[in-house]
Image 1: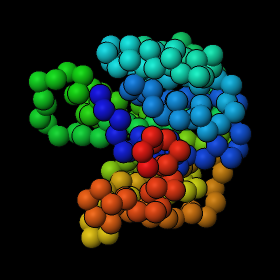
Image 2 (image 1 turned 60 degrees about the horizontal axis):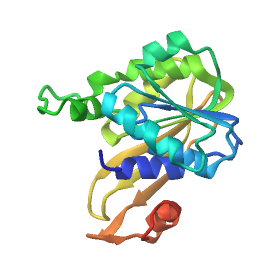
Image 3 (image 1 turned 30 degrees about the horizontal axis):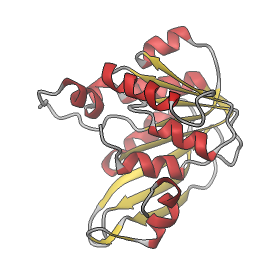
Image 4 (image 1 turned 45 degrees about the horizontal axis):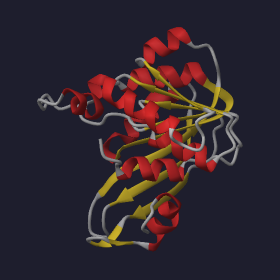
Length: 219
C-alpha cells in the first residue's frame, strides 16, 4: 500500500509538545504514523494495531528495519481484541481510519479493509480512545471534512474536546477535503487553521513544504 498524503499530514501535524511517554497507532497500515511519531518524539513505547495480514507483515518489517525498532511494536488484532488483551493508558493516540462507507466494494480484500469504514467503525475508535487515553493525553485523527461535525459529536459523548483543527484543501480553488482534529479531555478554545497543499499541480505551497519536509527525501 502506498504512503498517503493524509498519513504524512497527520503524522507531521500531531502535537508531541506534551512529551508523550507512549503512543498508540490505531489501524497502523504499514506503520507510517508510528514511525513518524518515533522520529518526532521521545516516546519510549509506541504500539500499533493492524488487522490485515499483509499490512501487518509490512508494518513489522518496517519497524524492525527502522532506527527505532527497540520501541515500536505491532499487534495483529482488531481494536476490540486489543482492548481485551491490553490494560494500559497512552499519552498519545493517533488514527488514520478507513473513510468510505459506500455500499460497493472492490475485489481487493486488503484495499477494502484499508478504505472502508465497516472494517473500523467510528464507534469502535471512540470506545478505544475512551479506554486507552491518559488524563493528559491527546488523540489525533484525520477525517473527510464532511465527517468533522459527526466525529466531534461522537467524541463529546466521552468528554473529549477538540483543541486544534486543521482543514485541508488540495488547491486554492478546491473545496475543503480533509480535517485533522486533535482532542483531549481538557476543554479550550479551538485553534482553527487551514492548509493548501498545491498552488498548481506538483507546485507545493510553502506551508505544506514547511510541515512535511522532514519526511520527504525530495522536498
